[in-house]
Length: 139
Image (cartoon, rainbow, N blue to C red):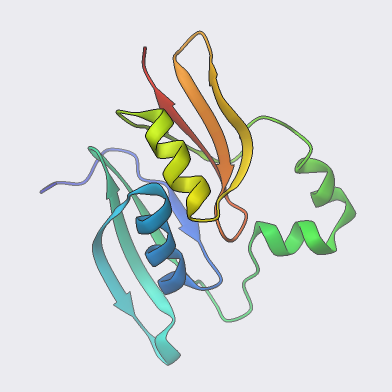
């Protein structure tokens, strides 16, 4: 990918470098850029999937991700009961079944198994810091 897509999700992580490694292993993202700042904190990261990309960073040493908030906040815990992906990222993949197994083996928290919907086959998962993702294959 030589140019940037028109829309790029920007996602904050407590441990940006670990998140980039995990996203590559579990979800198949390819690293495009990794810039580390003070104490090895991720100041800017870019990862590609197909013709799309995401940007990542650890905005401050005090940042806490969604998983942390759900562990400590009753209202945030209730959001985890919602089966939909709210404030998440949708990624189209070529083989959703293979992607599902790869993510599960890497330790993704599976929110729903692969299922057939009107738009295609899909599943939902959380990454290591609790960000929610939906992966879909058009059928």
